[in-house]
Image 1 (cartoon, one colour):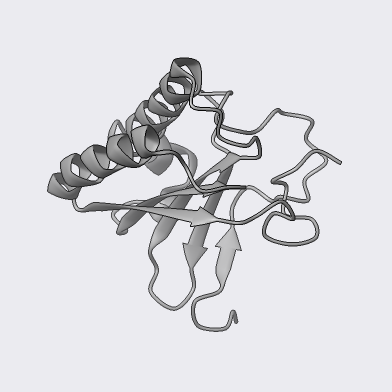
Image 2 (cartoon, helix red, strand yellow; image 1 turned 90 degrees about the vertical axis):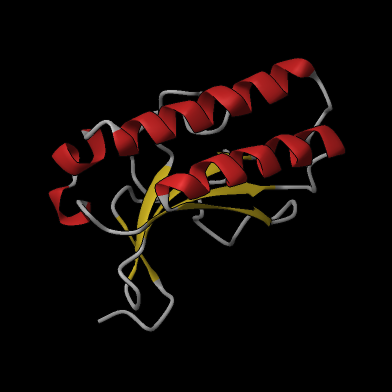
Length: 140
């Protein structure tokens, strides 16, 4: 059994699957994890690139969030992972650096809107090393 607060990944970061991951790949679910102590399901978006302040990067993030919400709310997640159906949901953005004011403002608006669906949004700044060996945040 997992320790409290430890995540069980449905999509392993150590997978040999060559599928691309990251915010720039909007229709790829990077990581799905379940908190073993709470049962909360977390959809994790990986951003391994430093924030550059461009409209393109903000657009890519918007598209990624929209795809994740569609995956969760339109039944795809429940169909692909029935063990997660009906569980509390959180979106999480793991990034290498602190987002700029434009991204922070956008994420604040998203957080407010998805709260109506009882979905939380968190941002974790992981630094250049990612979240640890084998995390999948950075290409090998």
